[in-house]
Length: 449
Image (tube, rainbow, N blue to C red):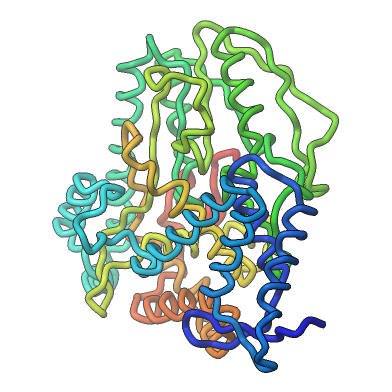
């Protein structure tokens, strides 16, 4: 056991000192610049600890910021300038994200360029017109027996977005080679991809799906935290050079051997699937990181049509604040993970800080690259989540309230619990169409995923 037993978090909370967190932070930064040497990361982390332990105070408890300063110093002094730069950028981005308080709100020096303002104003206008811009309005319409109408109105708006996306693709079909459907976790990409694929087939446009999940790097190459949780939310968890090489070959008419990733074993299996792209076919990619430049850097922009999905709900809670889009997606993912991946909802909550961090760093900044944005929010989905999740969130409020290691989990659990308490519950989901994007998460879909 080393000399340092505890550290002071930014909140002032005192938590156990975990040297592995230093090693993981260094390794994460190295991965972003192409390095994957765990032993080197461990060795550099050991140097950081040795410097910290030189403090003569027997009760010394370093602050997080102090540890990060030493990490930067050690990286630079050992000749790892690129890794140091990646680490510093990550540190600065985290500081900026804390100031944003986990929302897409504007920076103090002006409106954020990452927010699709025109689309938001259109969505807000729709919500006001339908009396769904507040939780109070939603509750009133449900109490008036209008839930089925809310479902119909919401689905119609989403369908218009999908149809507009199809029109945009068809308008450029002669020059396109690829359609990218992207967006943060649980934004409805899978269902939307199926719907767009179906509609394009009606216009004799053939799509060939390239599943980039098969390009994950082996699990032993991923950093993990002190809880043993791996970060799959970063684009650097993917073999980006291989993806680009295969895309370039496909666009050039050459055959590629698509790998197979065995998620149970956490590594690529020996099997491959031959794939070619014919003259009248487009590559279809449904990925978190479709807008991330490094994913398709070998393909010119004019050959790509980029769609971005987000549940752009414009509804204020009883506290006067807009409901967080990330909270909607968190609830969606909890239900989907529990139903289809045997993943406990609590694990989803504890892992969500990785999801959100990856979004803020590698997805949100690239929204402006999208050719079109689809709003996948359904105001009627919130009442369904009350009966399915409220009791869980109330339990997590209590569980994490005094746990300094789970501050993020408590913050989200507390916010969502207080929101769901104000919403009129709806247990009967029979009004929801079998091909709705919401069926992707609550089950009962007629689509094959």
